[in-house]
Length: 473
Image (tube, rainbow, N blue to C red):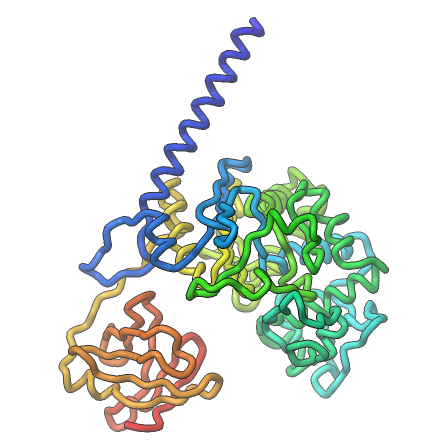
């Protein structure tokens, strides 16, 4: 009898492997843009072709289905100079995906009564203090507000440091002794949302001060080890013994990051080295805690709070996506881009990591292909119709526009259409297509430019939260 049971198990394992290989092959050859114009639907492309198109040297992906590991695979080069390929075990910088995993440790310490989510964060800061000012008279910066980006703290992101730089510690970072401004409160805490890596660095210091331990030890003991994330570390700089497993980062023009990667003393905000499979283990743990089947790190009530969307659909460390059905987070460090999405129910997780500044659109296309293959309906291409406007109407948009936060851009008429040329902070030329008589959109990704008018002529626009004001006709 045992012989037949063994044969059955072997057969099932073989069938599972064949199914995964078929799944993987189908996905690899079915990438579509996340956006296209009505009537211009593109043909499916291969992952290899799209990696070449976007100048992405290497990519790693992991998929979990029904609460269990499905498959993981690496593509391309981890390091071009040494001809080292990406494998499923290759380490990437997770960038801002560091935040939701750090949030788990903070919430675990709150469950243990070491830190209070709603107390003034200064109660736990001993090596440095967040200065009070006119904005903190009645409302305080708290751990909860840091986690959901409503603390009112400054410094949105971090560029990292070359490995040969004089690198400050976290206290030096928030004090303004590094390559970013000091962290301070610039608006009343709790009033509105603003992404703040600076706030997470304040949290990092508070957790270390409260526990009297280095942050990387807190993360290892409270999250990485309990969740069997054995390929992950918050140690910065990356320990020498892990260098051979680490991917090198690349710019969009394929040039290598100086020193192969940057160092991030802002560990909670951007300092995690990991791979997609380990991030998937974290996501599965969140799913299981939510349903109460595994509360090894956090209990179900805490995870319910973690996944309750607040301002900008952000929970406690995690973004809530697709009308509330999924959670996830993206990441962007110098030379690295990453993203993951996990269903609240059903145990489905997709994690994708790349070693290129131009990895984000490729990640979006591959994520969409994976969702489409498995019949998960949440990700579909955006399709827009092109309006037929006269040349006279199109030419009325031509001119120079000032974006206060960034600088000037131009809109010119060329080859019967409108173009934003590559100049100033515009790194890639943008073709603008009319959606109607007051909205143009980026032909590459559908990003809308909504125009305002005076006396029938455009005088400005809004795009992705930025405002452009016309300064020259």
